[in-house]
Amino acid sequence: MTSSASPPSVRAFDEPRLEALIETMFLAAFADGDFGDEERAQLISSVESLTDRAMSTATTDALLTRIQAELAKSGRAARLASVKERLTTPGERKTALSLTIRLVAADGIIRTTERELILDVAEALEIDRDEAADLVKELGG
Image (cartoon, rainbow, N blue to C red; front, side, top):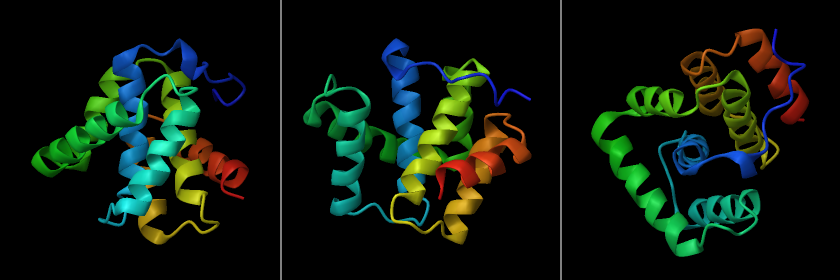
């Protein structure tokens, strides 16, 4: 089990890997099929915090628009496969899952659709279901 390995610092991620993390966070925010202005603003704020404001609001907004279009065109399974290709190590993939859990748990409730997304992300990123469940307990409150 890789839970003892600490995930890499996001600062060490190159652009494709950082975009994969952001895409995973977007998929979490979009788990209920809605991505309104409030959710968009919250996600942009999260990305700015995650990147120490290295990524501008305009750049993040354009990236989210592109990700949303790609999701509409190819579907969640294809987008998760793309994320997996860009996040090549178990630590990077665990970081993506951890960010996903934190985002869906931010309102204090993990809904059924969000639980399903967490399990989909874990499966797509080849993270053991038990390890994913432990992360939900640890990060989801």
